Image 1 (cartoon, rainbow, N blue to C red):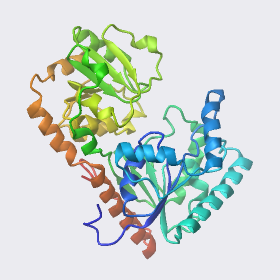
Image 2: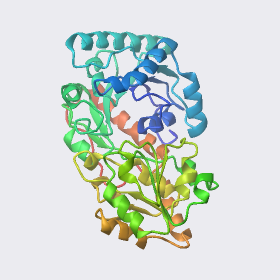
Image 3: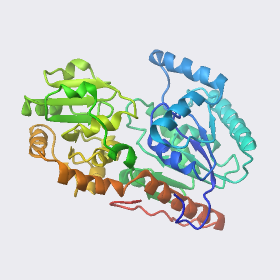
Length: 411
């Protein structure tokens, strides 16, 4: 992966999500980087104040804190994704009430101790800190890192499931402290500006081989009538329910298949040809996506989705599937490969118009586009950004150096 670079990548300390719980953007990225560099990964430290519904997950997190490295989860993810797990996985001993002054100080001290202990175990003195978590703000610049980067994938201030009043001041502190921001959406590059002035656009990538390698049709799709119009991802507030029903009405003899966790009331998605299949293991997901006759992204447009680069878009293309999507800003860079349409009846009409009886020519073209946006390409570009940021910090250069790259950045 690093053959084109003139220097070996540095070691990293990464504030990410729970490694192995699901295969996220940061896990895709650092699962490639860990092949050439030492990665110390800190599991999630929380973006919302927990309620009663979180007791189950809180108990699992507490057990993980006492058990250390979650080897069984790490092995499962490695087998499914072919990613290399981080050499060190830390379950931070923190409480998620980050806005409480006393708890915040306890968390800061605990995180510093755990980071230093992990660095000692790994024998590392020179490293770069990367965080996707605003509550990490209080340890940025306090652990001897060569440079620090905020890896921003969502606007936490409008993201469902977070506590904005807790996150907002922490994110502002983080932006004051970090040396650069790397964001998956151009809007985030523009709105999440750090005091150092360096901002970079690094769009989502794709596990190309995983989704392009042909798979047999899953058993639970074999008896569904074609065409199959499919969505793979969280069926939540971003999904326009009315458009799903319009599509179902437009293909009365076909099937609308939704694969992923459902956080909307199931009654709102009832229909004779609407099928809620729920989550599927990442290892099996390509087989489902390859069975779609059209892959859809019917997202409403709001402050959250305007800052989203849909991971599923490139997964559809890698599977050779035609794509119809809402006209969101981050979809525009794939205008040559994706059909965009307003929601509702127009979207349903676009889906019907893009049913391809043969599929072969379009599938080959879609896959060739996706191949240029692999996670290997993204990891290489990220390491180039790290080189630039660390060089600027080392030289004492305080001028803004970030490049907000549009279009197919990082390909």
